[in-house]
Amino acid sequence: MPIIIRWNSKEYFGIALMLLGACGLFQLIFIFVAQYFLSVGNYLAIILIPIAVSVTLFFAATIIFDSYVQVERKVKLRSQFRKLKAKHAKLSKLFEFPIVKPLLIIFVIFSVLYFISYAICIIFLDNVLSFIVAENLATITCLLVSNYIEKNVSKVQRL
Image (cartoon, rainbow, N blue to C red):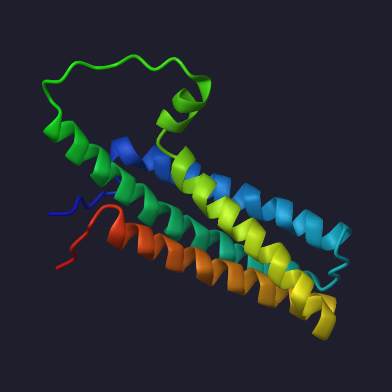
């Protein structure tokens, strides 16, 4: 049975706010890049599209977070009485923080697809339309990847 996280509870409300804030800051970086380096001048597209993308990336990050929480719960239940091995690597300690994996997955996929699709679209379209197409394509791909992770990594079976 999959874990259904209640995001309004005390334990996960802070994590939800951190995920939402990180997705908002990430889109703020893309707004800065679009305005000053890619010369997208339409303020309506610069404001409205990233707000919707931030919410969508937050949703994708919560899906991936739910999947990894379920995997960790399964591992913890199976290995209750095993001895713990000490990990001293700084990188592994960074990945132990619960929001790092989902955000890293989402941000890397979004960034790569955004810049590739913007580079392709700028050949055929103007700056504003290329920005909109690149943001939407990268966002939809992030949702598809989060769905794939949910289905295959944690083996979630929805009712």
